[in-house]
Image 1: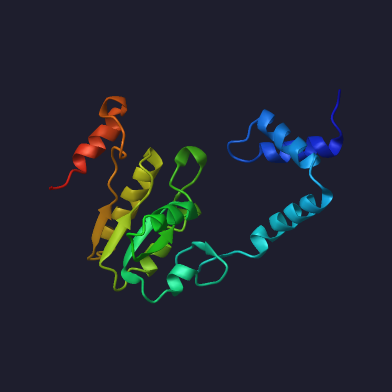
Image 2 (image 1 turned 90 degrees about the vertical axis):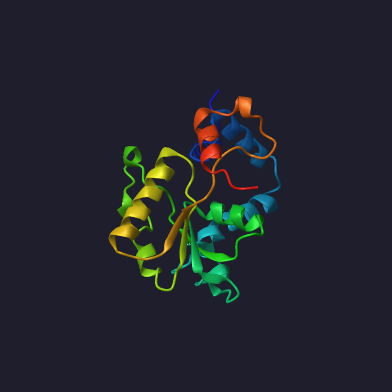
Length: 198
């Protein structure tokens, strides 16, 4: 039995989302089909306004409702420390920790030659424009091959420009509550490298 065209089209759109396979896409489509039309209209309006009502900050490239974003506009933040992250979601994760009071620079990805993502596809070069008066650059890219390559690229770019500032890398290692016996070798190596005095 063939599904109605509108249901098939909805399933196809859901399948394009990350982490959504064909079965999940079908469940979501049929879930929406059983909702009242007023809820579907509201859902559609929210999706339409998603891009219309968000802006990318011209300073740090985080997303927000205004330009500059809420963080860049906050004069209590320490502008001499910039934390470089891959995605806007990384900013949210660091902000949840309630420990960082500097500003951010969001790359919107990481260098990944296999996916045809080079430095020019990211907000990498903009970092150089922001380094005046900066004393520390924290590289908080993910502990993946792409994240490590991006961190190395940024380090080399800053060093080649002769900028005198501290470049640090966030610590990577074992999460709280994890057992060492279940950790992979790279994670354990990172945990040992990132050890600190007690």
